[in-house]
Image (cartoon, rainbow, N blue to C red):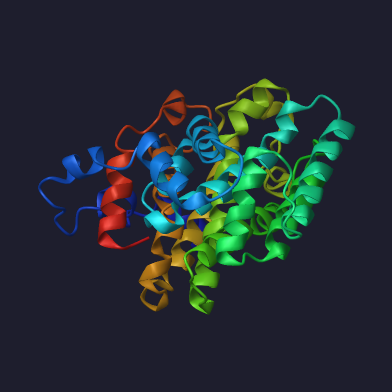
Length: 333
């Protein structure tokens, strides 16, 4: 890791929640947050525009997000109403693929599920979606926004390759995985928003990589409880740390140095994405609301000196809805 990148996380540069209030938000901001559309309101608006399909498929996607990817659920509520159901469908599709690895006991079963989704996407583009709620909503999104099939297939292919329970060999391999999954999802989200812009694509690439890295960090305690470690091996070797150190939930300095290096890389990608801020169309900003929870986690892990097992990192941020609303109101990412 290059020294400038490592220093970027520990520097006192204000970012995240501390930087949200440079402009004064409306006095009734809490009332605005409380008025964010809930599942029932979103369900009514989507149902009116969804046309034929599986009854309740829109609600199924929202509930799947609310239970399995709460941060994406909150972000989806802040999208323009005409895009909301399509964004929820994409995020639900991602959740369906992401949970395959943890829900199967044998790789062969996981491969069969991936094959189902590969066939489902093929059928969606033939206007013959399977009778499955997420697939039905994804078909509607494809029809409305002419989504690029390649991005959907790339997510499936990368998730399938990741079914092997092996640690990433390098930070570059982790970034490649994040680019092919999280960044691809953001490219599709930009298409839903009708944004075709090179700077927005560059920002999406870096934000997706940051999200993939942070997701790997956040999942480390859970994976450790299942006797698995997926952190990049090159960073671990650099600091003389073994997988057993993480399985023992070690708090040693060299273990924290591994987390510091990886977190610094995520922060570097966020910083790079923001360097395009003035060139990115404002219409793209809803796609990048994920930077709020990403930055929140990086600030929290910095406060506990990169102790990946600190209990505070597993606690939900009750101010996240407010932070997301303010960032949406400011049209920043």
